[in-house]
Image 1 (cartoon, rainbow, N blue to C red):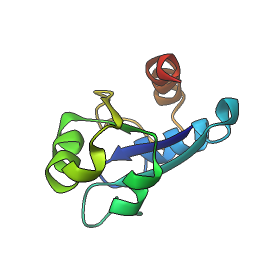
Image 2: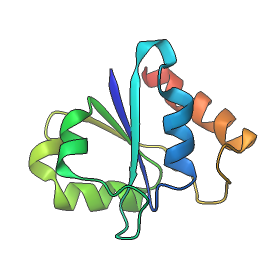
Image 3: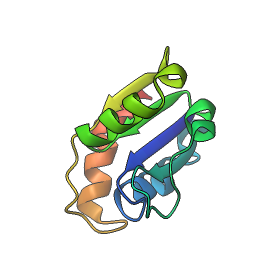
Image 4: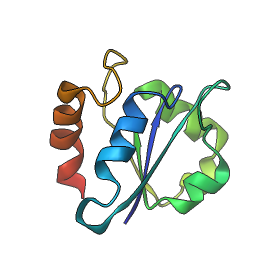
Amino acid sequence: MKILFLCSQNKRRSLTAEKYFDGYNGHQAKSAGTENNSRIKVTEGLIGWADMVFCMEKKHLRRIREKYPHILSGKKVICLNIPDEYGYMDEELISLLDSEVSGYL
C-alpha cells in the first residue's frame, strides 16, 4: 500500500510519519505539506500516487478536499487530529502515530 502523510510544512509530523512507516509491513510512505513554504508541497501527483492519505489536522483535510476533489474521490482519507506540538522523530509523536495509523494498515 502507498501511504501519503500531510501536515502544514512537512518538517516534523508528516516527515516523522514517512520515516517511521516507509517499509512498515511492506508499505511505501511519502509525506508533504499543505503550505506554500513546505519542505515538499503536496501535489496532484502525490495524491494520485497514494492509496491512502493521512492528514494531521482538519485544516489539511479541508485544503486538499478543496484543491483536489477529483483525485480524492474513492481514496481513503483520514484525519489523525495530531496537533503541531511535536518535534521531528519525537518519541511521543511516534507512539501516537503508531497507535493511530497502525489500525488502518
